[in-house]
Length: 157
Image (tube, rainbow, N blue to C red):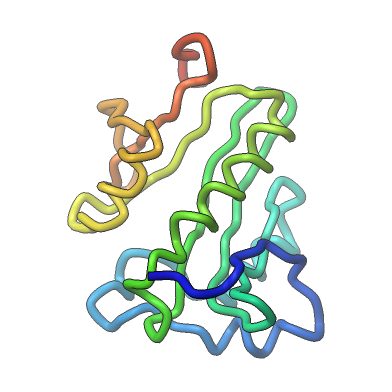
């Protein structure tokens, strides 16, 4: 299990090279975009919020969420832990911190994530955090929703 403190930090010029060098295991690579693509989206999409995931002072992953205030949509667009650090329980505290930031920024609304149906590890983790399948699909991925405290909020669109 985890041995160090997990923390979300800003993506900067100082950690950029380390972040883009991180990789998930080979059998997971078709489940998400590369870190460089996710960081690039943050540059061109003002709704994107990228964070480096650190264990102590070592970058071990990347998390990104998007938030559009006009319609209240808030979604996880990228969450990865480097293959060398997987299986140590580090994804859970990273997701906990990401969800707190998302809830704070969105005012506690419902949160969304799209997950490849073949990614059983991610599905189980999101479900353990209260996400459930909405029945909607996006590019073949399951749309999961974590309801706002006090009840489910209808999905936009």
